[in-house]
Length: 86
Length: 186
Image 1: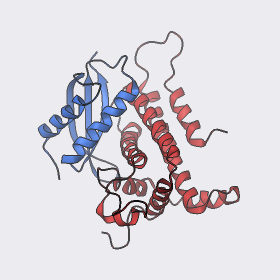
Image 2: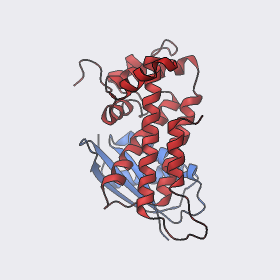
Image 3: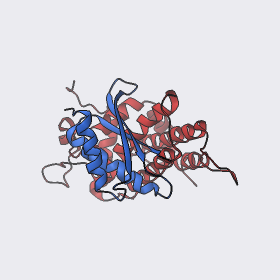
């Protein structure tokens, strides 16, 4: 089960909306990738409006929400990373 | 006495320390080393935990545990954790992981185990990029988030001590020795 990139990006935003970081995502880069054993995963890069002052646990919770929601529509594991728009 | 995994997590955190007055982004080398070290903290925690569940915890058994730990692989652990990190346990191992404490077998792994499984998958993937792919850049926040989630997942795992929790841990440990696959699976 695999979804297209736009559907996945929407799922990321919906997941983020449920967290304390709602509205802080400025851009989503999402690319299919393979791990060292050839298994597919999704490399998800979130550019945040800012990262300063965001508690690490809030980012952990955001990752978890994305993993759950993307996992419902795509078998590939979403590996989420963060960057700062500033 | 601090455990090896906690020592490694401290090392991962120290790599992100700033000198007094230091500004600007941290060097990528330190961020990447921190991510890698945090992954290995989790990896060695899992090895120790699974081997204790299977071999026993007595100090006289430490050599046997270490020998067994050398048989567990990164790939085998990934395959094991992949089967329990979703909202439902993979059907191929659901009956094996079911306990007498949960009627009809667990639809999902216990929260502490599911969290650890997700963190393992995440950290392993990021660690591989951090170690080998210089085209992928990481932020300091990526490393701090990895350290935080590893620390929390280990803490949650250790705190889970109901009889049903211990039973699930033991069954999962055996499954890990089988590299996440029961007989007859392709």
